[in-house]
Length: 237
Image: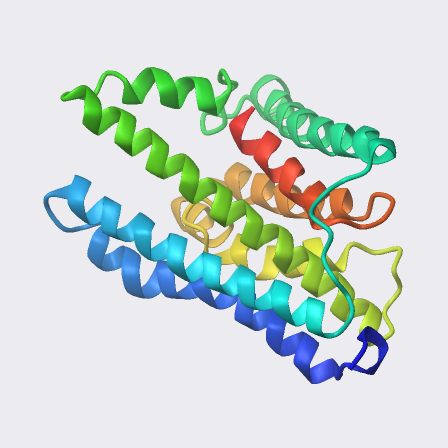
């Protein structure tokens, strides 16, 4: 078919398809699995569901891209290492600067400056007894993050390519904007839920997070890997 001959409608539908797993998780699965006991069993069910559904959506999108001669290249070249490093720096520095501004300038009682999340999680999960439960929880949680971040990166990729297909300016990170209006809105630590709690700083941070991911994707060669590294470094580091 070819990238240039693929219909605008298909691109828009794929953007919505990639967002659908988040909708199902938030409004169908989570209300059941995150409120049922024993939590460690239902939590495992929740994660496994997400692995399958997120993974299938990613696989389906990547296969479609290959079919229209727009193969997504996962490997990176040596001359791209600097851009991956820059994406990581964007994630870490962007979040830290925002948190510092909230804490020291606006005296926020909601935003705090913490040690890297991956360190806090390791320290917390190893204290769970029995130890196998803590280790298993940590591993399953971080496998979930890999699937989640991959799906987010592909949402940005699809939305940006859709904007190109319908003739929008490519100087604007449409992928980040689409992410704000989809995943950013419904995430429980995203935009709407914190506003309802009066925690507006969290909402602003989610908007910054999504836009930063969109800008990272816009680095030379426009690779989903840049978006993946940006969001991973934002959360984990």
